Each structure stands twice: as structure tokens, then as C-alpha cells.
Length: 455
Image (cartoon, rainbow, N blue to C red):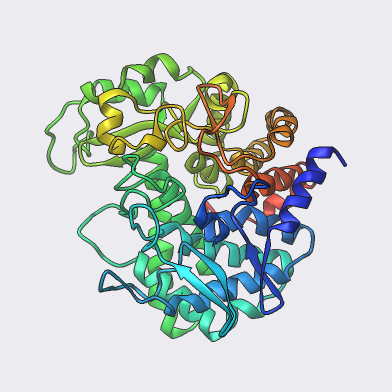
């Protein structure tokens, strides 16, 4: 066992949060200098995912089961934000154990009302469902998903996300700040990350829901929506040189069913960097799409999850990995992996981020490097037969992460500097590295993730 793995294991084990003597999650960060950001003492739903994957790979199912049930019970704790009632299916962004000398231990949840921007985390309910499915596959415990409160939660989450809106697209409309990119970054609308999670959540829920007359309608709707969503993403979000040339030749202001430019994308809106940067043999799923708008930025998590969950075709998945190999310096650099490429700068940065001083170019969510993405990158690389890229990324990251004491993120075009406002002892950084190592040793772990079928 190398020194980096030993250090990551120690950090993860010491981060475990307990409630009434039972482990229920992991805190977000454990800065040895006690300089951790205040809310990073919480257990975040999205942050716990890589920790949960490590625990279950090691056979420690109890903490994951306790986490799933604890999050479920917290739904009813906070039913309003600024006087407005929340949907019962909304799950908290995070929770913490509060110790009181008089009342003892209690759990306090944050539904976004205490977060920066006050945005409800749409991805939390999706990750919860996905983790429930992974838990069932790895632990063999099918009874948990069949419990009445769990079935009720699954129905509520599906009903909320499948609710008919004022759109004709199969994608899910969400605000900025509702996912891993939890600050203003111009991803409002239909960001790729949410669509990938939405798809995986639906096919997981279909596997977990009890087949009965009461569920027939919602299951049929989820089946139709997930099938349509995958086809839609493959067709309209896919970008390669051929598609770029097609867009360059688009006619605009087209009407009717024969329209080719369905979203009225203006060729002049294509950024100059795209044509020079996109290799001939590569491709990727664009970050966002809507009427008159195509976000050409490369968002790592959405693309990697799309490979992992079977949203992309095999050829598309291979093309995304070619993009990584051909643009390694841009997308990986000295610390895997860059969350978004390229960053926004200048006047565009002021408008898109609201002049966010934490999100300056090549930092944080605006072009920063996030080592937690290692697990998703390694999983996608292994699924596409690119073990060489998986090993290269891990070899790049391990010694530096150990030396730098597991930072939250890295700054710079190459990801060469610890983030100026990054927490040290970031638990999901260590957990992401550990699970990436486990995937490399046991590729069968790839089978625990939800997989769509083309049949």
C-alpha cells in the first residue's frame, strides 16, 4: 500500500460523523489547522457519494444504509424557505449533528436556505436515488428499498421531476447553482450534469419501485422520458467536427417540422476557440442547450457520468476519451481534472458569474481542477478500455495530493497551484482518489452503476 492511499484512508476514517453512536456520514473537510469553512463541518449529500462508494467497496454497508435513512427522515424537518413551502421530495443539501448540553444530539439539515445563493440542490435527490440503487447492488439488501417510506420517497421524487411544465424537451429545467457547480456559472436551463443524473435517477427508480397498479403510470412515464432523454442528449448535445460544420452552415429563423436548426442557433454564436481546439477524432457533449443558446464549454462531470451511465454510444464515449488524450494539458494538466474548459473571463466573467471573486478565471468552478473527479474519470476511462489514461491520471495525482494534504481544488491553467480558498483535508478529494484506486484493481465495481439499455 502506497503512502498516499494510507493517508487517504486515515483522512476518510477520521471524518466519519456519528449520531447516537451510529455512523451516518462524513464531514466535508477536516483541515488540520482547523481553518475549514464553517459549513464544511456538514455532511453534504453530493460530497458523501465517493465516500459511500469506498465504504461499500470495503464491505462497510452500515454507514451507507444509515445515511440513506437519515437523509430520508430529514425531508420533513424544514418545510419552508422564506415562507414558501418546499416540495416534500426535495432533499437537503447537507446536514450536521448538533450537540446540546440540555437536549442532547440532534440533526440539523440545510435545504439551501443557508447556502450561498439560497438555491435548492436539485442533484441531491438524484444522487440519493442513485446511491440507493448502488447500495442494493453491492450489499444485496433489497429490503431497504421496499420499505414504505423509501417507496413513498421514490414516488415523490419521480412525480416532482416528471411533472409537466411549459416545455417540449425531455430535459429537466433547473436554475444556476443547483448541482456541483453551486455558484453562478451560467449553467441555468438544462445543464449536462443534471441531465446525466436525471437519466440515471429515472432508470434506478424504475429498478427499485414496486411493480403495482399505483405505480404503473409513473413507471411508464419514467420509461418514456428516460428513453427520450438519452436519444435527445445523443442527438442534440453531441459536438464533433462534423456537427460543428453543420452548425456553421445553419439557416436561422426556421419554422415547422422540417426545421434543421430546431433551437435557432446562430452560427455567429460559436466561440472562436472551439474550431481550433476540437481534434478531428474527438467529440463531447456540450454543457447546455436551449432556445437560441448552445453552451460549447466542456463540463467534465456531465461528460464522464454520461459515459458511466450509458447515455453516450460506444463511439461517442471513445471520442470523449480521445478528447482527453489529445487535450491532456487543458483538461487534466498537473492535477486531474478540470471541471470546466475554458473559463469565462473579462466582461463575460462579470456578466456570467456576477463578478464572483472566488470564481475568477482558472479557479474554483471557473476552470479550476477538482481531484474528486478522479473517480469518475477513472471509471469512464476503464469503461472505454483506456486503462492507460486511468493510470496516467492516478500517477499524476497521488504524490501531489499527499504532499498538499488533500486540497479541495487547484488553480491555474494547468491546475498547478492549490486553490487560493481551498480547504485542506477535503474528504471527497481523498475518497475520490481511493475509489479510483479500487476501480483500477477491481473493474467489476463498474457494474454497480446504473446502466441504460438500448433494447
